[in-house]
Amino acid sequence: MSVTQYLFFFGVVALASLCQNLTGFAFGLILVGLAGALQLMPIADAANVAGLLSLVNGVVYLRSHPFQPQWAMLRPMLISSVIGVIGGLALLNWLSGNALSVLRLLLGVAIVGCSVALMAQTKTRSQMSGQGSLWTAGLLSGLLGGLFSTAGPPMVYHLYRQPLAPLLVRQCLLVMFLTCSVLRMGVVVAAGDLGSNVLWVSAVAFPVVTAVTWLHARYPLPLPQRLTQWLVCGLLLVAGLSLIASAF
Image (cartoon, rainbow, N blue to C red; front, top):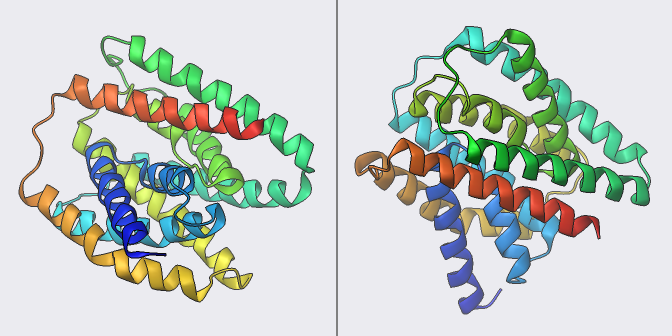
C-alpha cells in the first residue's frame, strides 16, 4: 500500500469505528465494502483485517462503557450465533459457487426487506418478543457471519424493534459480534490464512480504532434515537444491496 492508500484506509477505519460505536454493528461491512471499492486491498485480506480490528474496537468500547450483561437476553444470542457461524462455515465449504450466489441473492433481498420494514416502523414494540425469535435471529446472524462475514442484520433488525435502550442494544450486539469474531478468526488462524500483511495493516490501524472509540466514549454524539434508527436502516440497506450486487 502506498502512503495515499494508507491515508484512505485510515479514513475508512475511522468511519467504520464511528458507525460501530453509534449503532453497535457495521464495522466489517463498511471496512470491507469501502476497502474493496477503493481497491485498497484484496477482499479476503480486508475481511481478516476487519475481523482483527473489530475485536479491538469491541474490547475498547466495552471497557469505556460500563456494561452489566443481561444474561437472559445474551445467553440465547451467543449460543445461537455460535451455532450459526459453525453452520455457515460448513455450508460455505459444501455449497458450489452457483448455489452460493443464489443464496447470497436471496439473503440480500431479505435484508433489504428488513431495512425497509424497520424504516417504515414509527415506534418500537410495546412488549418484548418471545425467546424463540431471539434464538432464530441469533442463528441467522451467525449463519450470515459464517457464510459472508456479514453477521448482524437479522439480530440488528430484531433488537432495534424491541422496547430496549439504544445503549443496551449496542452493547449486546458488540458482545455477540466479539464472540463470533473470535470464533471466525480462530478458524482463519487454524487454516493458516492469516498472512503477515494482514497483521501489519491491522497493527498500523490499531491506534485509529482505539482513538476513535475512546473519543466517542469521552465525547458521544447526541444523536436522536430516530436518527440512529435511520442510520441503522441505511447500513442494513447497504449490506443487502452489496449481497445482491455480489451475487451477479
